[in-house]
Each structure stands twice: as structure tokens, then as C-alpha cells.
Amino acid sequence: MNERIVVGMDIGTTKVCAVVASVDAMDRINILGVGVAESEGLNRGVVVNIDKTVAAVQQAIREAERAAGVMVRSVIVGIAGDHVQSFQSRGVVTISNRDGEITQRDVQRLLEDTTHVAMPADREILHVIPQEFIVDGQDGVADPVGMSGVRLEANVHIITGLVTAAKNIYRCIEKAGYEVADIVLEPLASSFSVLHTDEKEVGVALIDIGGGTTDIAVFEDNTIRHTAVIAVAGNKVTDDIRKGLGMMRDQAERLKCRFGTALADLVEDDTEVGIPGIGGRPEKTISKGTLAQIIQPRMEEILEIAGIEIKRSGYARHLAAGAVLTGGGSLIPGTAALAAEVLGIEARTGHPTGLAGGLVEEVSDPKFSTAVGLVLYGLRPEAEGGTASLSTEPTTSPRRAESSGESLVGKIANRMKAWFDEL
Image 1 (cartoon, rainbow, N blue to C red):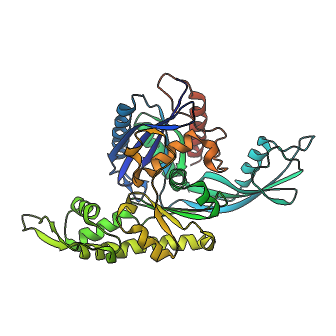
Image 2: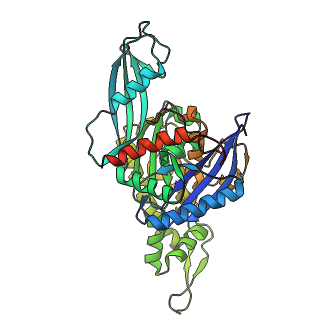
Image 3: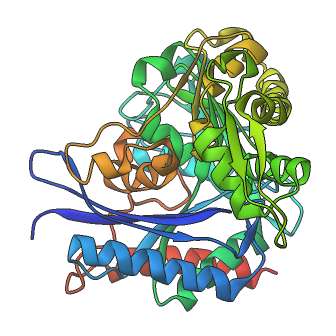
């Protein structure tokens, strides 16, 4: 088989999702299989129960394997949680080649130089993303390879996370019987599947509202400028309904998904909805308008915190393309309209794009944005907009069970293990 096959694994607070995809000779991406399992082993994006997470990972991958007809060996996994932090850094190296030509090796050396920053022992770098290169004082260089120069500098965006959080995700995948090909920040992954290139160029904020975390990524000039993860998301909305109406959590979730509206003004059909009684009590009713009044304040809070993060990035006035909302939390009708009102910029709901065939309809839902983004990250490393993870080769594993590819997976596994040995 000539096609490359990659598995993306989104381990979320409410669901674990595996997507198997391949790229054919025409460079078209086909979705071969999808698997979804309920997740009970995470809290706010961080693993809190290894066994429950392992069971969910195995169930999701088995389902995806059955649909795709392949054997999975390794996966690209997403990481989130409010422990994720980002900051800017700067590095400089001299070009030692006789002819003064800048090579890919010089760029890699420079990116490694930018990572030599003082950091607590319990944190590790997840991604190093170049913002711009400067060659002999000339700034605004997007790709310096092949240019002549003596001094090469770069401004980079560094994303860090807790070593223990990454280690627990790594353990879960390993215990489930698979290998980790790479760990990718979830808002970065989501951006590959829902943002258009022109949006990234003129300036856009991605707000991925999941179950346990809301992920934010700000782009301008085709480069990621700011990332953040906040621990207020869709589960808080469900909790508000559960407490406000005195009902079971799964009933509150169903009520939110079937009848919820994020903006009370948009409720036209203010009909009554039946709520099952608890402990043999009689059934109650609630109007859709009242339900919207419970949901709206919490959705406003999520979007206000996202707005604070966007302002903190310094790019709030540069977002000509406005905001793109994705993730399961954005499925509540009226979320985009509420976001436009709260943030004061245009807003739309983002669905995964860039797929050619296979189970495209099954993954066109915003809740699959991260998992689809993870496979796009693995299949098209050149589409990352200059993103450089500290692994130097693109992640094109996993393949069919009989194929090779141990060397790359081994290298990345060794890199991960080196992190954990430092603890």
C-alpha cells in the first residue's frame, strides 16, 4: 500500500474519539474509520482515572479499526487542560557555513536555542512555533532556508504543559496497547481542520468549547500568536441545568442538547418541555425560554473569559475575520450570535473541512474538529504554517499493521521518556 495512514486520538472530558485517515496518491485525505466512546476518566481535560481512560481509548480505537479495516499501532494524541501555558521567546545563532547559506539544520539549531529558557522542573515544552525570522537585522522573513546571512534570529511562540499531564496521557495510550507517535496541543489541532488559510492571514480567534475545557488560539499573518486553555466549558452549562432544575446529570445533558438555546432572544417557539421526576415524583415541565435563561449566563461567562484571553494576546484589534467557534459546546443554537454580541466581532461555527472522501459526513460535526485536526497534522506537516514540534521529522505513523515505521515512533517515544526520566 502506498497510502499513508494516521490515527488521531482526541481524549476529551466527555468523549474519547479516534479518527483513522489516509492520504492517497492525489494528495486527497480520506476518512477510513471513526470511533467514539464516553469518557469518564478525565476532569477539565486532565486524566484523573487511568483505568477508565484506558477502557475508553480501547473502545474508541476498536470501533475505528472495525470501520477502517486496519490494525492500529500508534496514535497522534491531543493534550489540553488549564495547565497549558504559552509565552514568547527569542533566539540567535551564527551561520558557520563557508558560503553563508542558511540550511534547515541552522533553523533547527536556532529553534533549539530559543528553548533554553528558565522553566520549572515540572513543565515541559510541547511546541515551538516560529513567529518570524530575522536575517542580519532584516526582519519579516517567513522562511530563511537558502538565504545568505551571518546572523539568524527568530521570535517564537513556546507552548508548555505539565510533564505529569503528558505522562498520564502517554501511560493511558501505552496501557491500552498502543504507542504515542506525537502529542499535539488541542487548539492547534482544531485550527488545522476548521480555519481557512485566508482567515489565518487576516486575523482570527479560534474558540473550541469542549466538555471540560475551552481552548483558544489566535492567528494573524498565517502564524499562531497566542494559545490558552480555560477550565470553564460545556459541562458547567450542564451542571447549571442540573442544579437549577433538580435533575440527573444525563437528563440535563439531553435537555441541553435537544432543547437548549444560548441566546434567550432567539427562542421563538416557547413551548413547555417535560422533565422526568426524581425518586418517583411526578413529571415537571419547563419552557424553552426559561431553559435558555439558565444556559445564557454560563455561555456568556465562557465567551467573556475567552475575550479576556484574546485581549491578553494583544491581537484583539487585528481579528478582521472575527471568531470561529467549534467543539461540542458550539452546537447549542445561538452560540455564534451570542459570541458576536459578547466579543463585539463577527463569529461563525466552524466544521471540519479539507477532507475528500470516506466517512466525511460522519466527522463534519464541530465535536470532531480536534480529532480530524490531529490526522491533518500527521498527514500534512507542511500545512502547519511553520509549526515545529521538537521532533524533527513529520509524523506519518501509524501505518497498516505489517508496515515498518518503528524508527520514527521509537525516536519520539525516547523523546517522551527522556522528559519523564527528568522527574
